[in-house]
Length: 185
Image (cartoon, rainbow, N blue to C red; front, side, top):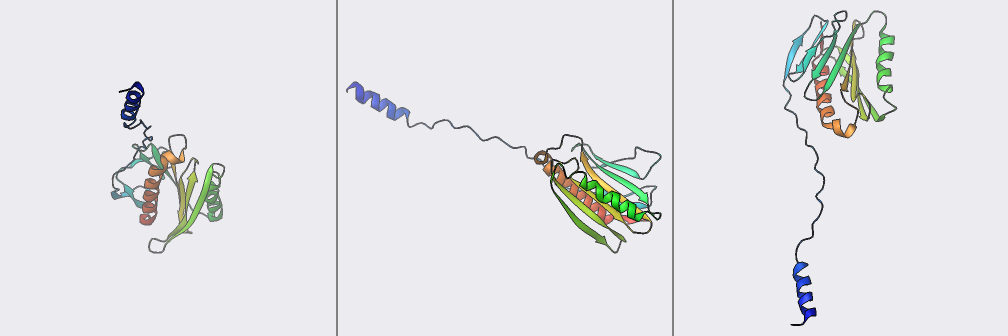
């Protein structure tokens, strides 16, 4: 055999192997346990069902109806703030509607949806915030005569929408459940 045939044969045999290819980056798959809810009662003029994964925290003894629902596994909180309506409904509504506007600088989109529950005498708005905003969802509920409750999700991390998206969806479902089960006393 000539040297050129031998070299050609070696090249042919060597070229039959697969060439190494870079593997695509893996993505972290975040999964959360199925929500289970239980009714919670406070020394406040309202009650609701909360996710069992959430820990109740009342930090301000002067405002016992300002409640935080802590989600330690997600490093997130839902802040709830209660205010009585005393000829100040218009001001409370204006303040509650300004909250989502503060996130317009970083938000890609803010979707507002009207919420109405005639059985529990609650109405309000639910705001979904998309993008690298500090809060991914906010809401307010009122009976228009005596009670007003606002709430917002905040993560204890730098906002990165892609990273917190699964947790934000999970907490948005919890907020919707809270809104649906909220009862005034």
